[in-house]
Length: 100
Image (cartoon, rainbow, N blue to C red):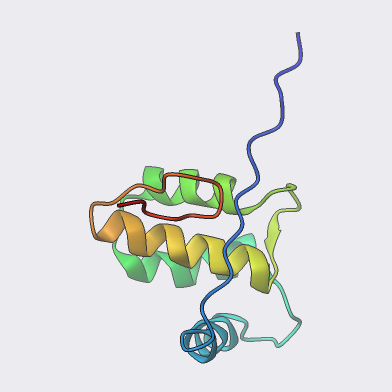
């Protein structure tokens, strides 16, 4: 029996944080193609110092629908998840809110 596709997370940085997220994406997107391949994303996301297994989970959560690349919107999800995990928090919904 086929498994349902993973849930699709979405995250739009608030306007005051968008320049920061865009700067991170530009830094990671060394070839300026507008998306990160797996190796480029791994290189950048590994800077977080999170365990490799957790980074793999974050990749799976962010790369939906799966394309084996991260465009800016998927990258925002990955970075937000990294921020949450680094601070010992877990999202409460698909919009990556923390709740109260």
